[in-house]
Length: 357
Ligand code: SAM
Ligand code: SF4
Image 1: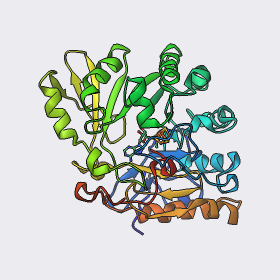
Image 2: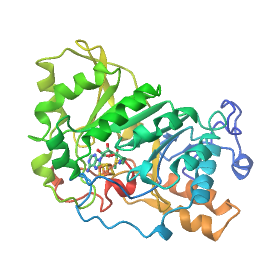
Image 3: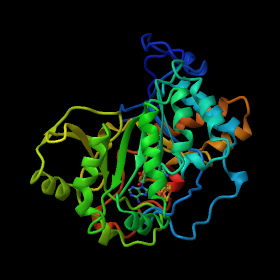
């Protein structure tokens, strides 16, 4: 078998004891792929629906999935329990827009019972439009950090990019998150000639509020209606431009995600770069994604994976689910297949809203 089990441990206890196939059967083992990468981070999409329509993410007339195809709360909970027992200790909830799922806080509360008992971190990526309503509750169930997407500070440009006039709600959401004591990270997709000139202002905006900010290159995911070749902005260029007005010092800091960080000396804040197209971050990949339909993807840019919904529905005992997860980790590819030269053709037919960013 290409996967290896290491540091078998009951959920919540420190990894220590050596393991055996018996430990796997008992549900105690770490997920290590055939390239010796240990999988400790799950990004779970709880809905494909969204209240925005960002041009790089989905078409204006996005067709959402029928509700019956989307995992129930019980199935989502079963998945999280299985991954936590395999040593996955970081869970990021995403979407679509996770906060538009009905009764989302009931679901988050269910996940939060694994905190300190398998999970070390429960976090979320959100567009922020509904955060003023939920920030306090998220904090009270044990969420400590949150990623909020924000591509511009200009109301008209926000409406152009997201096709909705919601910048005011996002701003209220950011304020509410900070007031609730959540550590905020702003995520900004860098778009050539669209928000390119605004990046220094976005950095100051985040750092003035004690937030980190991460810049992301557009990825060729799904059919968007924008021209990705036209909009693609290399973060190498952004960094070179920023260096003309800021002093950027490389940091060893990591949040367990793919971003490489620098400190901006003039603001004292952290700035991250996620560069899937110009830098290969696959060698240290520790994460997998599960869509809201229960499809496990072991690599963002490839189709390899497994149908966990089918496994759960075929065998309610959970045995098949565990086997299916292990089989998929065994097949996790060495790296993604994104290529800046082929940006106009999606490397994956899935949109980010389907896979979960
Ligand atoms: N709706 C939430 C949000 O916008 O934060 C969570 C889901 S969204 C798919 C997660 C992240 O993916 C967002 O930061 C978004 O900007 C980013 N994203 C979406 N489509 C992308 C693409 N084609 N390339 C790069 N980033 C993308
Ligand atoms: Fe919705 Fe997030 Fe996609 Fe924008 S990036 S359309 S907010 S899922």
